[in-house]
Amino acid sequence: MKRILMLMSLCALLYQTGCEKKEEAKEEETKFVVTSPIRKDTTIIREYVSQVRAISHIELRALEKGYLQKIFVDEGQYIKKGQPMFQIMPMLYEAEKQKAQAEANFAEIEYKNTKALADSNIVSKNELSLAKAKWDKAKAELSLAQVHLGFTDIRAPFNGIMDHFQVRLGSLVSEGDLLTTLSDNSQMWVYFNVPEAEYLNYKTNSTAENMLKVNLKMANHQIFDYPGVVKTIEADFNNETGNIAFRATFPNPKGLLRHGETGNILMEIPLKDALIIPQKASYEVLEKKYVFVVDKNNVVHSREIEIEAEMPDLYIIKNGLKATDKIILEGIRKVTDDDKIEYEFEAPEKVLPSLKVYVE
Image 1 (cartoon, rainbow, N blue to C red):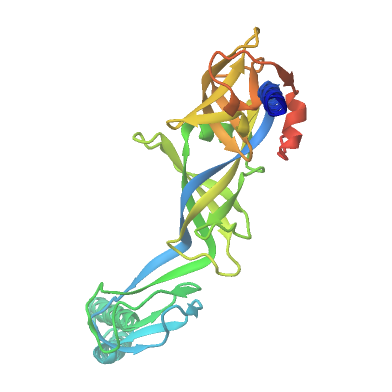
Image 2 (cartoon, rainbow, N blue to C red):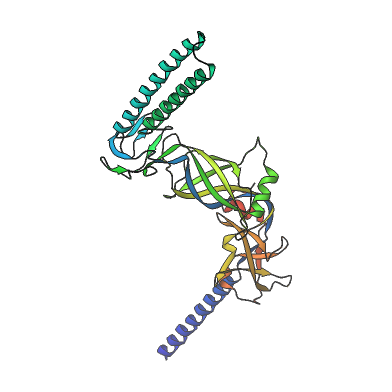
């Protein structure tokens, strides 16, 4: 009899414990936190894929045919304006210059003799004019020979960094052959494409005195130390993409940036009356975003939303919500469509600071 009573007591205890657990679970299920979207003026960071270019990047080509006799520089070397770089064998052009010099000297002597005779009325003025023309022609040919000789001595047109050689010492080069390239990396031009709507916002809010400043995120995801300024915009939109190209100028005092690099431009975009919700109030199904909206009868309905922009812990809503809607903030995994719930409402002004997000 005692054993039966003990079993009955144990069953009653287990039943009571089970009921208490169910009651606790039920209480937990009803603890929902609800908030609303908030309208705020804010600023978001847009990223644009960009190409980095040197402000001057040129090809150095041979201007005369001949053997590459000397190379005065090395690949990757920083060189200064006027510094010798290459020399093409100048002997032929040196000989042509000497020949032209001799002919110019002869023509000069002939002109002076003819002038003396013309001054004494021994020869006609026409003969003097002919002698003068011969001398002028000889001087022009001498100048041309000097130019050709100068083409064999290739010097840096500006301060810059050498690229790799396209020829080697002793190579036979023809007129127009590529020798190397030279980049002036003191400043860098960074090109990126901007959609039409953002272009219009930029033109509305910018002036010549208040040019847009941007930052560059490099390929290693580090932010370049020096901000850039948008100084130039292309004339036409790309009809296929609806974008227009911007060009930002960045100082490069340490020479870190090189021609041909890639990165992302980070541009601050002001948004007026943006509709903002916490990211954790949303969930995703098949790459679409949803929130649970609570109606006036406390019934939950899922609703698809369209995201205009993303910030740390926040979404800027483009479509799907109004500022007066109530959305579930805590407990979205505990409800399904058409559930009736009880909740505590937290004002969005209180919710946002707890997310450690700064909204202007």
